Length: 158
Image 1: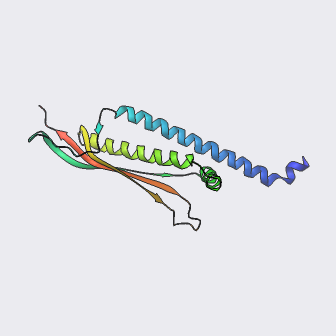
Image 2: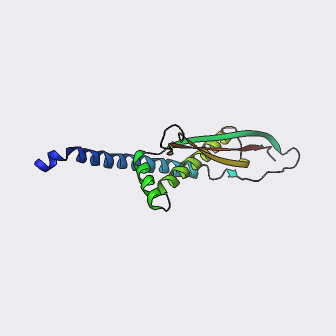
Image 3: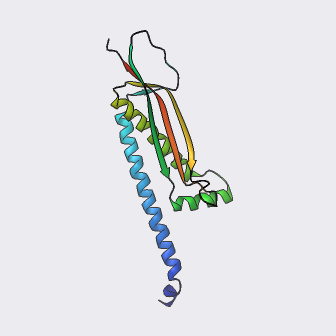
């Protein structure tokens, strides 16, 4: 009992570390479930990176659509990334962060196109940037923004 009381600060630190890991993992798994569900719903909407050419009179409307997502990294993943930077290798915590941000941005772009009645998106572009990198003195990644944009095409009925 005396040892526990002497190391109470350390035990609290480890408890909070485990709690943070569990909460972050749960939030990430929940977000991935949401992404997969919405991707299935929007699977039929074609998204291409090429420019399109259509016969005269076939396109009823062409509109710019965008989707943006900002995803933040939790402190536990930041700690793992710092350790990975010391020893080298893939930083999986950042890979999942960027993957979630990109997929979410594309989904939001597709949802906006669907609201406009579009059946496809052409000339899609995807960009990412880090946010908060210069906001702190340690030059660590805070959040990632991904923006997807393209031209939503509404075709005339045949």
